[in-house]
Length: 268
Ligand code: SF4
Ligand code: SF4
Ligand SMILES: [Zn+2]
Image (cartoon, rainbow, N blue to C red; front, side, top):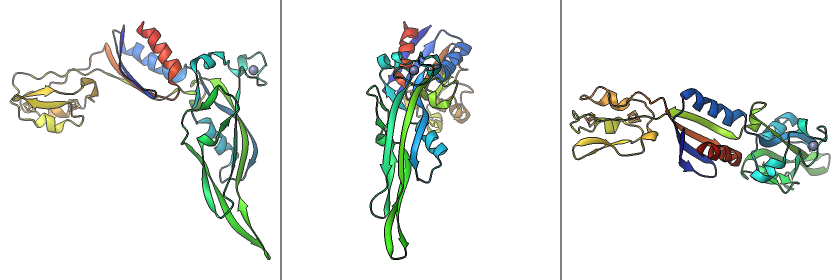
């Protein structure tokens, strides 16, 4: 088995896995989605919520906000059901975040973002700061001669716990994870350089050089749509059936570090 990284950014990883069956590649995909543990908000103590969202909707939105923890700190967390505190909540199984927000003093509104979630645990912070949670409105009201501004307010403490995607999607460390078989493109000697396949390719993989079609971009970008074959009048097939042993993975992650560790282990 060989693993070659094509792209490694803080949020996106792409790699080519070779020498394994499609079944193995698929089990790897499933493990990345459902078995790698991650921290997510699991319980919310709502002290006040006069926003337009029901408490349950608010809690669900909070649960889906990705949280960031360093790999060494994540190792020290245990699932609440396995913790020696018996699930009561302690620093080994729980991290708390607080949200206090109120609409403006004058008529109008504000949007509460993920950055407004204040972590009460130095090990944990939100991974993305610009995720909108809820809008809070202020409206003028009059009772007799009395006039004031009705303001919406949220006050809560959220508890983040360790879990896996097997239990709930909020614990999935990847937002998208998939693989495809690696395409192989071969241009035959019958090519007359007409360029019809180049115009047909939606991924700009092909170009004409010195009178013949050539593969001019990374072949893993090919979507196997075979539009190039439909366009060509000289060659019936030039995208080979996918090779079963070569898989091109592409994943976007919200908690990349534990995944990268597993991938590096596989690579070794
Ligand atoms: S199969 Fe589709 S994406 Fe791949 S080279 Fe042909 S036209 Fe382009
Ligand atoms: S459409 Fe066929 S003949 Fe024309 S450039 Fe492409 S491969 Fe060559
Ligand atoms: Zn505990």
